[in-house]
Image 1: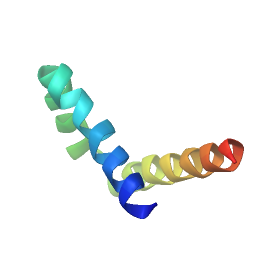
Image 2 (image 1 turned 135 degrees about the vertical axis):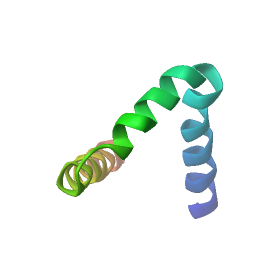
Image 3 (image 1 turned 90 degrees about the vertical axis):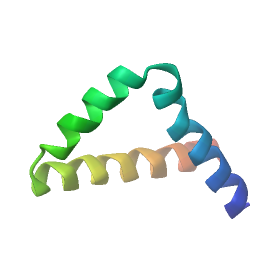
Image 4 (image 1 turned 60 degrees about the horizontal axis):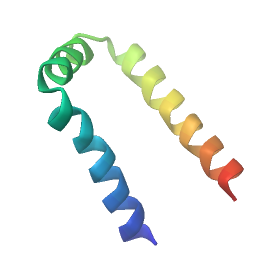
Length: 58
């Protein structure tokens, strides 16, 4: 199950650079300019959203 989750994550992560490389590059550039606090907030929000999706999908 862990390998399935990893495989799905890699597929989803690869969609944006494959479909819209210019947009992905600009987004990535903006992310690198964020402060540590902003990055932590984005990471926390992402983790909470993932946990909610897992909770409601079961």
